[in-house]
Image 1 (tube, one colour):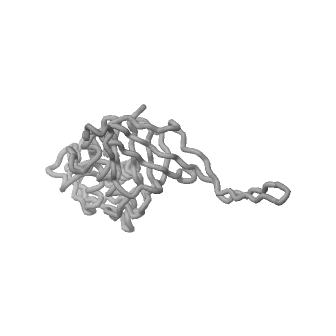
Image 2 (cartoon, rainbow, N blue to C red):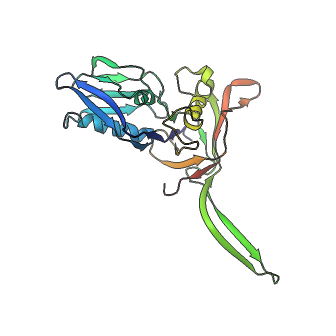
Image 3 (cartoon, rainbow, N blue to C red):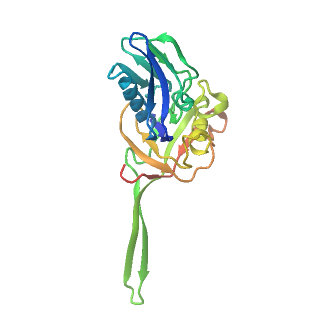
Length: 258
């Protein structure tokens, strides 16, 4: 079983998130804006790349990529294929989400963040999903009535899909708790605080949509909302050894239409 990846949906506010871009051999500064809307982190990178490519009227040589695979670091890289560039963060929220700490200068072909991207959690042990890559069980709001003669009548109001949850039973301290992080922002605890505790304005919902990838190297995922967790508890995997922690996300409801 793979480790998987968890992404929480980000809300870019009215007016969008902007940067100021200068490409050394072409010119600038050019204003590059990610439009207001809802984005999962993977989609945010794609949109940002599209806008960087369009900044000069079709330069088309940027890549915005992330180390979010099964052995990923959590870092984001912004690169140009042939030209050096500099970039200033007009919107510091975009800078923070992508894991950068300051202006991208002096001019270079490639810049890589030093902080873990926000909204993304990368477990470092295998995922346990009881139903494999299935989206969960179906449940209904079903009411029944029994007549004096024993006839049974049923009425179904709603049908939805419930998933009992995902478990990572051997998460190391750096990927579980803030106080042990070796990369700032890499822990489940920080991810949960960012996404589910109103710590960041760009996660405005108390129960944001979550994409849970069954393998961080592949594209198969389902989209859920977590319904009951209220803390960042990650108990010891073994009572005699506190370095490994168990993280569980769930129960969840699958987002209709995803």
